[in-house]
Image 1 (cartoon, helix red, strand yellow):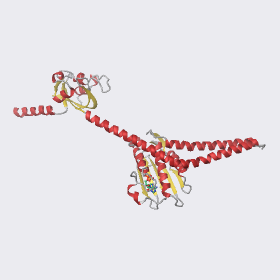
Image 2 (cartoon, rainbow, N blue to C red; image 1 turned 135 degrees about the horizontal axis):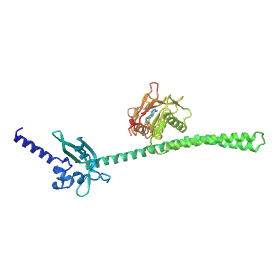
Image 3 (cartoon, protein in one colour; image 1 turned 90 degrees about the horizontal axis):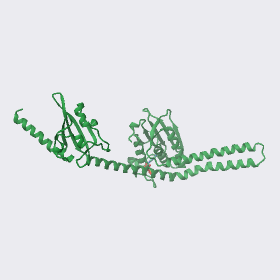
Image 4 (tube, rainbow, N blue to C red; image 1 turned 180 degrees about the horizontal axis):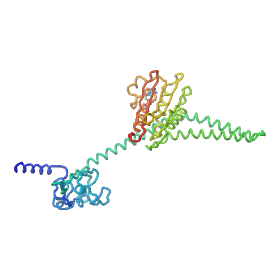
Amino acid sequence: MDDASQALTQRYRDLILEASGDGVYGVDDQGRTIFANPAAVRLCGYTFEDLIGRSPHELTHHTRPDGRHYPASECPIYAAFCDGEVHRVEDEVFWRKDGTCFPVEYISTPIIEDGRIIGAVVSFRDITKRKAAEAALEASRERTRTLEADLHHVSRLSAMGEMASGLAHELNQPLTAIVSYVRAAKRFLQGDMPDGEARAIEYVDRAADQALRAGEIIWRLRQFVLKGDGTRTFEDIGTVVGEAVSLAASAVRAPSIAISFHEGPGSNLILMDKVRIQQVVVNLVRNAVEAIGDVNDGRVDIVSKVDDADGAEVVVRDNGPGLAEEVRDQLFQSFVTSKASGMGVGLSICRSIVEEHGGRLTGEENASGGMTFRFTLPASPDNAAT
Ligand code: ADP
């Protein structure tokens, strides 16, 4: 390259650096500023003269974002001319002359001449706007999460309203039994039968068993209504689904419909929000029972099993009429319902709960009539879209 071309190239380099919106400065191998472009000067609120010959770390990088002192020995900018590596940082702050700071991302690259590191060049960008956009996005995600949690809660409460009368019916049985056992025990104690006391004790024991049963029914309802706080724990899928099926079966009050639960071989602990997964099962069973209606020999079969990848699969199969024409193509869409008093949100909530766990919920019509809903839950928390 002749001298004229070299001068031109140099001129362009200078112009590019001057025009750049990113701050660019260079330091020598002692960490002193030897060059700074106008953006670097402007962004940090210093003059060119303030910066040249001084340590940029001491001027603009002395304190960490959380207010702690930032020792120069830990500074990635300086590290570049010590270890010869490129250092890229995305979440630090630079301090202005007036004591305020701004978030930056920067890259510090060693300058090498004749195989020797003679300094580093730093290119940085003010990311205030990006951070603000990220914070706004996170705030809106948080709002969505809150709304979703409320929606789950509301739907659980309304499901509970429907279940209350079914549960009242189921509670009646142990309560009636308790009254009879206790009355019988009293009669044995008052009479003069030789084994009266022993029999009274036996009847009091039976009453206690029934009281425990009543307590269990109430416990299941409480678990269901508890507002899930997103806490995930490792649970046995068979136990979780079994409990939900008992709850649904006692709540739906459909004596002519046979509801069966079968737990497949093997067991595996799955990381889940138990309350929400039970809500999915209860919804699917309730939908199946409602679809079957008054059909004779109605059946709902629920199976939980461990799948090939050590995840879980839960299948809810019914022998009802299958899908109504108006919902066929939009089964999982919100507010699509074939029921006079339906809200049409159950399945879409179920799907989002399953997907939050990294699984899939599908529904298909059986060749022999009725529907099969199936959902999966992956074994590994890594697969779960939290
Ligand atoms: P809702 O029960 O309030 O209507 P869902 O979202 O739970 O809301 O269900 C949407 C629609 O999907 C139901 O109205 C019904 O038409 C259909 N559906 C759901 N489950 C079944 C099933 N097992 N058999 C037939 N149709 C079903």
